[in-house]
Image (cartoon, rainbow, N blue to C red; front, side, top):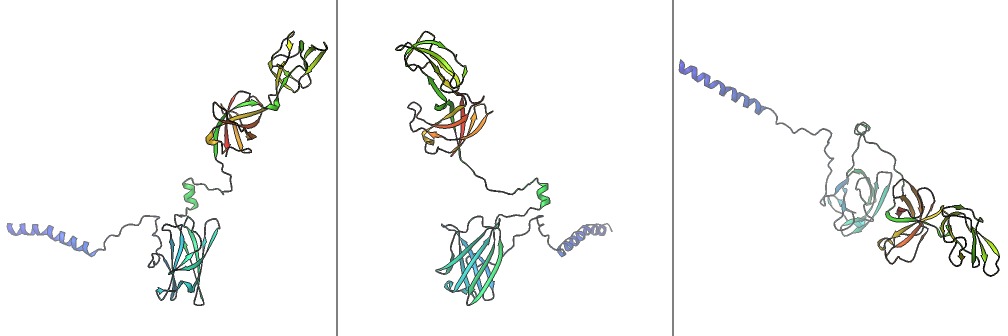
Length: 338
């Protein structure tokens, strides 16, 4: 009895194991789960040249894009009853509808055993295709989508992901080069005040830094020849930036004063040889103060033809209006749209 009981106890686990295996074998094998949101790419029939097959009864075309060592172009092979057909007997046109409403049209000419598209199939290769072929007096038409690198995002998904879209429009893109320069008084904004005839300086009416008006008497000089005293007026309005005479002194070739108009300025930019051929008269320039607080848009007024011997640079002149940020002698930076 003891032996029989032991035998039954040992056989029970074996029976349970065999039953479990039998039940498992009766079930279907597990299938791999599909990733959510990733549908399989639509498949199509491929021809001997790995192109897309288009069939209409006994007539068929194989459409390929050939780009081995050449820009992408259509190579299309014709078949009748699955045997190569004479490409000279086929008249073919292809239309590619692209994003934005653009349509590319291709005509074809026979070459060897295929029809060659006239023109380059530009990137991206993502379009709606319309094919029209005339063969044996019959017209065949196909239409299909050939999308490469294109996806569709729902409005809800875009909003959740923070994606925003706006209509694009034309915009001029310029290449910029940065040059350094210095503010100078324009030649027409600077004048020397000289005695008309040599003689003694009898009086001076202006001091250094004083603003003056055009026609204002700045000095009186007694002519050494006629002993007559004559006035010397300011030739332009501006500020006295130089004073080279004193009362009782002799007025000769040296100017008594130099008057400068602080509103007539230009920025002289130093153009190095590597940029000399790119800077041209009329190009727009954004002039910036070294602090970056002041900016003004102007243009290249002139490029002086001679180079500075020491620095080997040309000077590009850019007119600017005077102001607190633009004082003669101050350094500036300029972005030239070349």
